[in-house]
Amino acid sequence: MAAHPGQNGIVFGTDGWRGLIADDFTFANVRKVTRAIAAYLKTAYHPSRPVLIAYDTRFLADAFAQTAAEVLASEGWTVQVTDRDCPTPVIAYAAKHRQSAGALMFTASHNPAPYCGIKYIPDYAGPATPDITDAIVSEIPVASEAIPCTIPSEQISHFDPRPEYLAFLYSQLDLDIMRRAKLKVVYDALYSTSRGYVDEVLRHCGCDIEVLHAHRDVLFGGGMPEPKGEQLLELVLRVQESGANLGLATDGDSDRFGIVDETGTVLTPNMVLLALAKHLVKNRGKRGAIVRTVATTHLLDILAEQYGLEIYETAVGFKYIGEKMRQIPVLIGGEESGGLSVLGHIPEKDGVLADMLIVEMLAYEGKPLSQIVAEVVAEVGGPLINHRLDLHLSNPHKLAVMTAFKTNPPTSVAGMTVQEVSTKDGVKLYLQDGSWILLRPSGTEPLLRVYMEVRTAAQQAAITEAMQVQIAALKP
Image (cartoon, rainbow, N blue to C red; front, side):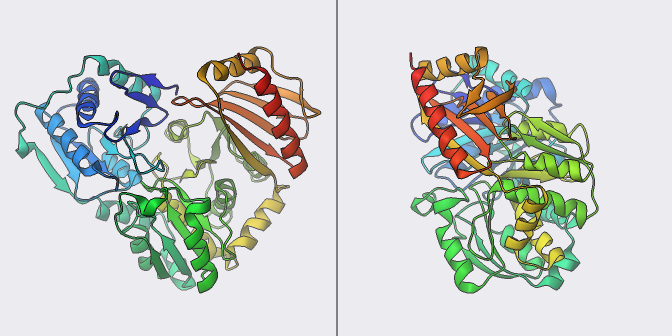
């Protein structure tokens, strides 16, 4: 979904509205957006249904949640607020399980500490589709930012979503085989909402665990709540030093996963999706389609063909994967940015589930994680190299690039023939050897992302140089 500019700096991107705390993300704007959501709710739900509210570990996130609760109560809704910070997949599950009018989640996910955000999760437990967010955005210009005159506090209560979610999660896992495996796991909460969830589930599954950073820190230890690369250096070190079978992490609101194998290698989400897809078919005997975004590895397509599964490609954004999950049986749906869900689960990405499925896979396979990944990659003819360029361009330059590539796409890049062009989301160039390039503009900032999947480092270098030259030449 393209970004939707609203009033007072309110811009809706692919997953709700995010902004800088005390700059555009203010209590006044939270009241405005909450009233816009309330206006939508009146068109979609009976007022007897409760509205749920949750928040992550960020500065003032709990206070923003309380402000939204007061606005909704003043608009006539019964409101249930979580009793502590809460993972996005947990409040999404509660939105469905509690027969609600949906949920408001205050989070900026993996973004830096100065940011906060708000997204609306409908009662089907997945991300809001564009028709819903468009309806909400249309109400923002006329929504008031005023403090409610009266707040019926009796319409606001608190609840603990953990028991319901954990019971459901356990029903999705093979607890017996996990307990027999007695795996050693290092878990890095990254100061996120997954503390009290991932560690609790690991203990319940009989794992020997070491826990890092399992307390609320609104500054995320001076880093970012993103489970990859430099944010996981301590986790990598502890896995190596302790001889653990693996390391696990989540992002700030626990909808994205981070996986470290026994050697200390941080696995890419593409490799995690590939390994888990095979696990679900081979070890759990499950069937269904594989759904990926345009920016996610095509090795999943090869795996789907080998196991006789359907493959679907969607635009970037888990809402599109979630929408497909509500239409057909989906074995696994995922994206290269670190989100996935599986057959039988809610149509929302879930980092807690993803972490535990890796543990389950290890228990079934009885071999090191690095070996499991190497075997499935070899099976599908890999490895391939995935790379992303983030080019900071002015908005006019970004527009010129996208217009040129859509209307007159190149016939070759770095000497490789372009065999097909797709404009499903951005511009995707399919090259002669199965490699591909995707140009996709950010909807909220002057940034153009160039994704690629290639076979060699030499190809990556050549394509990177060629794309930078072509894009620079299009500067207005």
